[in-house]
Image 1 (cartoon, helix red, strand yellow):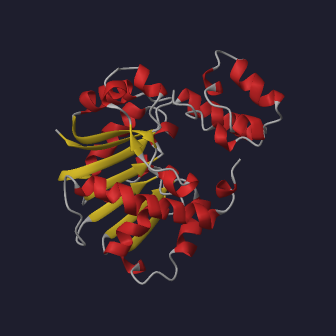
Image 2: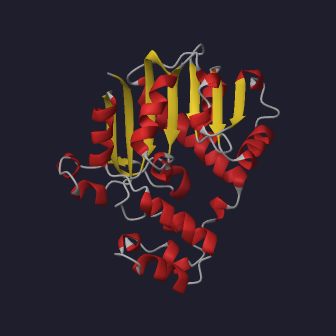
Length: 262
């Protein structure tokens, strides 16, 4: 496990920096961000991704199912000069319909989709939160990429740095985790990511089925978030690799999608 997963202040700042430097410009390539825009983040955690939108003056809402995450977010934003524009909600997104009935200009998710069960149901449900011309940003890693099992969370230094081992077949993967002394809770969480695995191809089938239009997408060989984490310059995956279905999932560290209602 990396120090950043324990140091919540550092993690908050990393999220804020990546969103400000890369995500907002990605969105602005389709629609310029304006202070009057209403922004929703689903699975907001402690709110690092929300900070650049709030700094810009947007009306910002964050929802997360974990009360502890929202409690930390409230502490992080307690002294923010625009905190009156911030609404933080502890709720399951499927129970949040009345809270969001007016709709949002931008709905935002980064590194959350791969944790969600029944992604078809989820994408259908979220569509009702978008204004007619609203945009939905999603950033997620394909499950098959070198660390698509989120094994960087492992306590074992070897496992946390071992690429692709989350693709071991059948019971071998949990057996290896237990062999190296990983806790029952972490094994459960990592196996859940295996259950909810998402690929580029399946995600795009879900978009078509649920009536979304892709407005913009980027496939990265080096994740933009790696700049603040590791000092690596973001790099798009080559057009050749990006154009080969299924194979590309193994060599793309994150996907950025901007979609709207068809």
